[in-house]
Length: 233
Image (cartoon, rainbow, N blue to C red; front, side, top):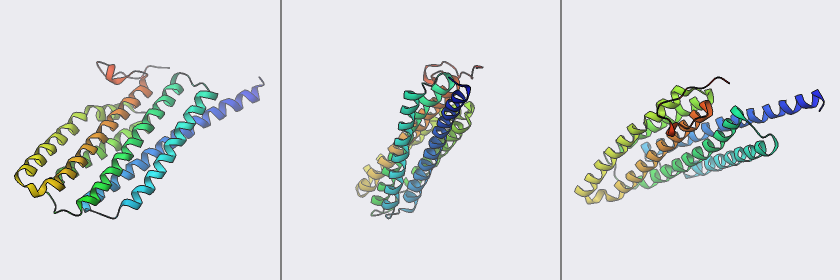
């Protein structure tokens, strides 16, 4: 193969990988906005978010499909190896987790619409605190993904228990309130669903942290007894 042709192939391959990284970063940014809008709608008890939610969902789904097609093309035409293989595999898994976060954000926004018909409950403040926590986790793990930094991803992974503790406390308090005040069963059920959706967002942030760990180190975090640092290439 002529040197110029080989150089062109390598250059095109590098451009494909760069575009994959850019698309993944854009998807993460879209999903972050989607979650922030859903949490804002819940806090404001906003019943007018459905059009915005649908518009965001279309963009998230289109970008997720584009990432999947690019990954398939990379495997079919480029046969990535070593670091590139880890990046490509991780991008596919991370995009799937981000799409699910987008779905969960959509669910939260629709629950916010339903909540507007009820009197406020004190436990809504706990939902907002849980939402702030998982939004922070998502932001930090996406930053770690973009920078390929291990420590921020590990912090998110370790913080999963904190999210679970907040969710368990919220569930406990809402169930007590619903038992004592039957008129709160309706709004309480919506709050429980929102809390569960946020807990699942936290789980997906943890999944992304594990994917970042694999992308950087080549090892699976859930199988490691202790965090592993990147080996030299």
